[in-house]
Image 1 (cartoon, rainbow, N blue to C red):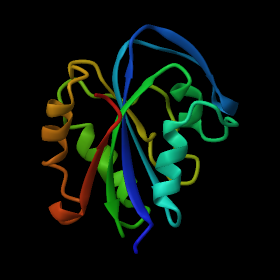
Image 2 (spheres, rainbow, N blue to C red):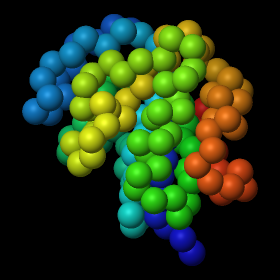
Image 3 (cartoon, one colour):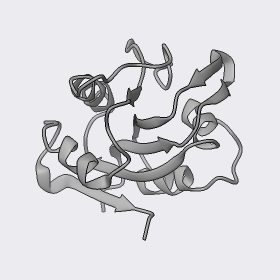
Length: 151
């Protein structure tokens, strides 16, 4: 069974939060929806399970924001190469008002401007989030899996 690929975490920050993001420094994050693109060249399912947990050692940039933000869901593209996370971010940046809130966030191992996208005009509604991902052409549509932690 394939267990590697690219993922996007959909997060909702209900309030303004000052977050120290490891060595990047402290940033003020406005409330709203965020999308974080990452990859796992092995153990993709375990990586997503780790992102769901709040009780963990803070290691990746996203771990620091995750302390404050609710994880709405994740989209997985199995077998996608690591560079797919950069392409995913570029597609997300075409959404209305999308921007990179922290330079270099999650992109310490590539030349991207960052892998965290702030989507201020997108409500924390998973139907909208699900619709938004259909325009992102990284792999066959059947390779998308959507997970939701809500009721």
